[in-house]
Image 1 (cartoon, helix red, strand yellow):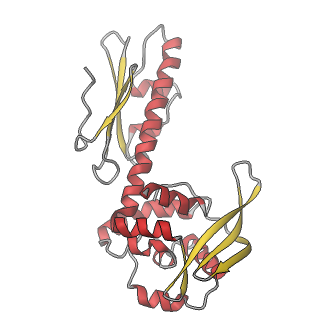
Image 2 (tube, helix red, strand yellow):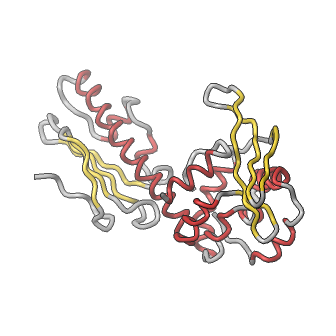
Image 3 (spheres, one colour):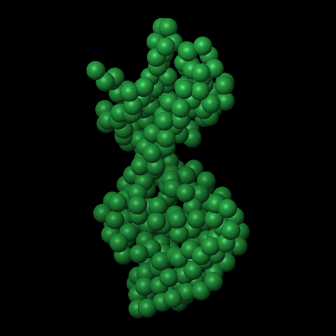
Length: 260
C-alpha cells in the first residue's frame, strides 16, 4: 500500500516512482499557503519542484509528514532521487480546470502520454488547517503510518521490482548468447560486451543492487544473483536466478543460497 500511495502521487504528475526532503516546521508554511486556490497550489508545487526547492514543494503536500523527522544525512541520501524527479517536470503546467467541494478538490492538468499525445490527469487536494495541499485522505493515512520511512520504503519497493526485471533480462540475454556462442553461456562482462544487458549492471549507483553472473566450468549452465548495495536503504531482498527460475529472500543483504 505504501508503494501504491507513492505511485498514485507521482502518476498524477506524470512521474515514474522511485522517491524527499526535510521540511522546516509546518506552521509557517501552512500560513503562507492559506488563501491559495487548488490550482495555485498545484502550479506552485510544480514550480518549486522544477526549481529544486524541495522543502517548499513538499510543504504543499501530504508528504510533508514523511520528511519532518529526517536527519540531515537522510535528507542528502534522498536528494539524488528528487533531483532526478525534478528533471521530469514540464516547464509549463497546463491547468485546464478545477473542481472543489468542501475540503476536497481536483485540479486537471494536461500532460503528454507515452505517445506524446495530450491527456488529462487529475490531481487530488485536501484542505488542511485552512490551506490546500496535494494528496488524498487514503494516501495521507498511509504516509502518517510510515512516517519518515515512507520514501525509503517506496524506493526499496521500486528497486526490488527493477532488480527482478533486470534478472529476467539476464535470463533472456543468456538464451541469445547461448544461441550465438556454440551452446555456451556468458558471464556479466560478456553479456554487457555483446550489448545484451546495460553496462549499469557493473556498478550499483543506478540499480541499488550488486549483480553477479556465475558460470559452470564448462559454460553450459549459469546462475545470477543480486544483493542490495546498502541493506535497508536500497533493498532488503536478495535474489537468485538460474534456468529453474527466480527466487528471493531477506537474508540481511547477503547472497541468497542456491536452491537444492
